[in-house]
Amino acid sequence: MQPHVTDRVASSLDGFRIEVPSWGFANTGTRFGKFLQPAAAATIDEKFADAAQVHALTGICPTVALHVSWDFERGLDSAAAVAQLAHRHGVAPGSVNPNLFQDQIYKFGSFGNPDAHVRSRAVRHVVDSVQIAGRLHSRDVALWFADGSNYPGTANIRMRRTWFEEGMRAAHSALARDQRLLVEYKPFEPAFYHTDIADWGMALPLARAAGPQARVLVDTGHHYLSQNIEQIVAWLLAEGMLGGFHFNDRRYADDDLTLGSIDPYQIFRIFHEILFFEHETGTRADVAYMIDQSHNLKGKIEAMIQTVTVAQELYAKAALVDHRRLAVAQAASGLVDAESLLQDAFSTDVRPAIREWRTARGLPIDPLQAFRDSGYLERITAERAGRSAAATTSYA
Ligand code: RM4
Ligand code: MN
Ligand code: MN
Image: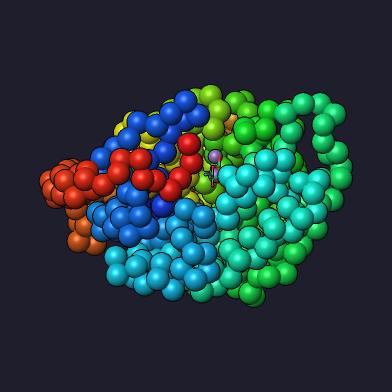
């Protein structure tokens, strides 16, 4: 391995962290059912314990994203206990995600519900979530809405947009100075005709209407198939409005498959746009990298380790693009040269350099193998198998 490759990989990885989701360790399913795993985490204690394994083996996942209704049994009153548990396991609470999509009152929407009473309940839940985040010293509150409608003519699209603006402003006004509101979009599901925040063209003005501490969150699974996600990323960066990512992969819709399993070049291109932006502006993009996956069939902790190590590899590959030569090739419309710079970086095997990076930091060179050798899975399988297999705090 050439020394400059090893150095570039090492320095890029020193700055790369990725957040794991608490719900990625729990039993989740599809709308057709759930295949239960005896080792799945059912409590926040178990979720932190599993997340801590991923962090101990990879060294790059110090924070855990939380979903308010699944992880805080008594809402704000649980915040102190949750913070303590995280601390005990050696991880920290990360982004806080309100649940605005499951309660019966949200059948016809939350921020967009025609019933003012429901809208204010939804806003109150977000304000509570902001307070929970404050107690946990979490910076980001990430909003995803299931709001939408299934049939033409059944919802007043413009009115709902106004209600969304009102809700966003109210939520934003609860933020402390160092907190952020992240606005996520998704084209469809569970709504099948219109979704109130269907794409970045809707999330962006809503984030702006919310206030100066709001940004857009890009979930890689929330786009139509041929959409150019890295262009959206580049535009949001240029607008100063990219707040973070929910990483996952998919073949068809919001499949929540492990990262890079279907299209690793897509993720590489996203990382490239961010790193190119950082090179050109001389600034660090203030972007939260988070995973949002649901592992129905793969072992949950293995799937998480797989995703984290793939994210690390793709980020390292993107860091190998020679930005100066790229700028020269682009300016001269040297198409083949420019494209080749990306392709050469993408096809470089960065794994030896990553192994060196891990060794230098006292981490196992192969986190997945180290997990298999640790006996952790066997231990939790035995410990957790006894309790109710249906016990769960997540969707489906
Ligand atoms: C949604 C969306 C949200 C996540 C929920 C569980 O599809 O991606 O970010 O919180 O799933
Ligand atoms: Mn998401
Ligand atoms: Mn999703």
